Image (cartoon, rainbow, N blue to C red; front, side, top):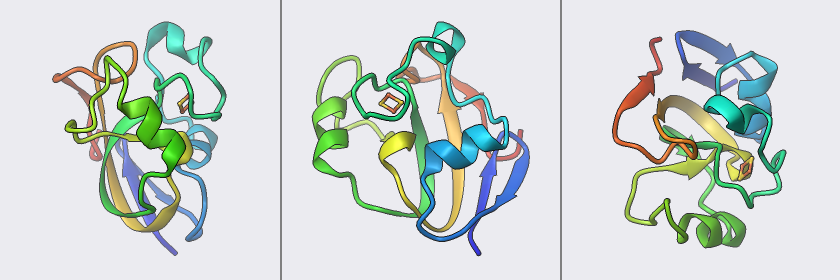
Length: 112
Ligand code: FES
């Protein structure tokens, strides 16, 4: 059973679960500001669920790669779209600032 560390929470989940769903089910602040209301609900088009992921997760699929190749995201930035990410093992999540989570300032870390 993988553990997800995010915003000071340790969440136990099943391998194969969707990262966005796990974070939202455990009231982690995945979205920034108005993105809580204005997002694509996991379709993979808005890009606002971007987080830094450390640990064992699925490779980026074509939908995620396409969205992260568009500004303000960049494929060279260490971010993943939570809605397109499958949890495979223990992971740590960090959220950055900016409407899309594209900034350089940490908003919350795995520990809080
Ligand atoms: S929720 Fe829109 S891209 Fe993930």
